[in-house]
Length: 453
Image 1 (cartoon, helix red, strand yellow):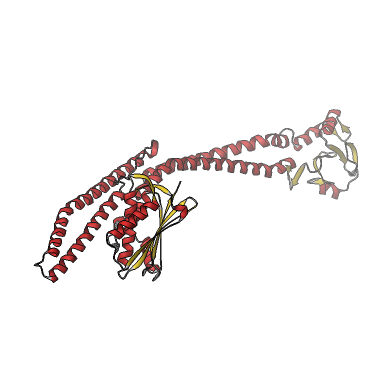
Image 2 (cartoon, one colour; image 1 turned 180 degrees about the horizontal axis):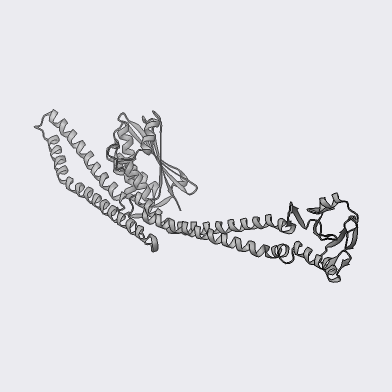
């Protein structure tokens, strides 16, 4: 946890530094953008300095030629009002500007505008110097003034800065996200693989290497535990064969012993049947364990499934299928020659488990159908019966409730048979999928899908 915190803190610190750099850049951009405007309007060329310069170069009697040329070149105008409010002289005066003023007129425009022209005034003992700037060049508020070109640019400036900052932050976010995902995706994938009980080997360098080492150690521990579990099951399966064979042998001898009573023979038959069930259970347990831990080598060959089903059906009938059960094999013409690469023994085992499930679930008999059909690039193998079926609740439980071999929670009642678990593992080992359908009194149906070439 500390390693992840340190890793994330690094990226947070990078973002903080980036934001600080952006603020510095924004201030620098503001200074560069508005330097000329600020220096022009509040520096030596400001209206107040211009007014002072013109006032020093003029009087009630007139204005110096140089000052007049400077006003004209900058599109400015000027006039000098005497004590009576009349103009002594003007320079570049617009036609709409009057040349006669009352005291009230002078009071109104002296701090603001004259006919929408921003004006600046300079008073001396003889009169009042008035300099006018072009319309919309300045906005005057009370005793201060603001250049209009600056005010117009400020919203655009801040909008541009905002867009730039957001773009930089987005690019930084995208880069950081890609970097984090690139570094953490192998870890997440490895954890997901560990949750499925798979053995992994993670190779990472840099800041997350310690986490990779921890995951690898956990994987090794899980792998050793799984191997020990599989070996234990395999060992028990092997060790139980001899005493089980002896039990089955003695039971058979009792059944065939002429001197044994009928009651004893019945009990011996029960012992024999239950021993066969134990033998099958041990075989299933061993095979499930090997498939689960990928210790069962698959002997794959190109197999024609139609031939496999017919061969299995013949063997089942020849082994003595009770008369209360009937077996049908339905092969569609387009699937007759369909072949898949598979382990023939395991696929046969899966089909047999499903058939035996139908037999055990319907002690009063039923019809069992083995069907094969192909749709587009999918081969569907179906095992179904017309027996008692199961309820929707039981079907949902069968699909979703884990087997006890797949769960670590020993408090749950998970001890349903190994048969369906074994079927599912065999099909998954062949990259197929399985679908179960059933309704009460409408039979039980299992569809197995394989991809065909």
